[in-house]
Image 1 (cartoon, rainbow, N blue to C red):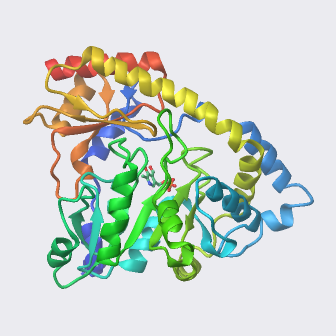
Image 2: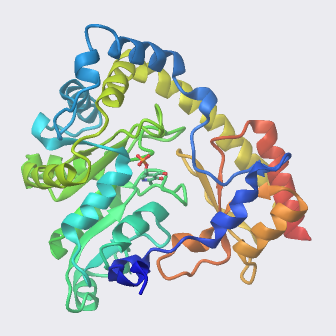
Length: 399
Ligand SMILES: Cc1ncc(COP(=O)(O)O)c(C=O)c1O
């Protein structure tokens, strides 16, 4: 008997996606890719990082930078985050913050912390694929989070069966994959629903800082805090990330929550990786202090212009029957194609005939629906490339 027959049941729920195979073709010359939701590397604050790493490896800091450190995270960075979270309406203390290895690690820990097999996780339909993958390992049921009031707490609880509804997960600002934002009323309705269900809220703020127009809406955690007065009474757990603003490669994210949640997550971190890389946290801290306030407006200008170019090109080139979202920030536009058009087949054809890549939307649905949707990312292409890519998309859709 080979050892792969000994894998735990959860392993059978972890599947490699077929799209990955197709997207391996991305290295071909002449391909235009709207597939990856990644920052443009030309916009990384590389000089700032170079200075920060040099300082961290210099005589004054190297003993700390190269050493083990505390699981909770580098204290100066957590202090910077107290101010940053305060600036978006979340008053918290040092003990409410844990540094994680990207916000992806926080999603994994929260799945581990809350989900027993058979429990229910409420998620958007579609939702961020990485969140589905992280939660899926803990063998939950997924149910569709609807915050517009057409499903009440009693219905959710009845459907949860033997398990319980443990949390609602959402990315309220410029979600991956749709680019959509939950308005103030929706955030309040979510808090009402989760109060009735007595479940946690996992607020994914990965794109929160990248707003290109419209007024900022307070995070769900800020709204809850304003109502309840203390973060210790809040059910919302905020996951933040430096990946979309400073650098994804350094793997630095953070969680803000009530102390009992953070303490439990610290134990998980001790068991998983002890702490996030000390030198990376020190570098992020130095760069955030030096340039976060000037870097973000620059990203907003550049990505905002790319978003505009994509929306204009869609207007110019899409055939009748195609609909798309108009995101106020983030990195994605979400297309709904006429019923019967299959996003995965369209990708295969687009790669083959017009050298264009994007992500078919079906993967973002827990039940495999949404086959007539696709996700386009505008963050990593300039305006001319975006216009040409959307022209190609129009061509392949008409063919
Ligand atoms: C909505 C969302 N949350 C979390 C992540 C994970 O980001 P990271 O682990 O780099 O912080 C991503 C990455 O694409 C994302 O789109």
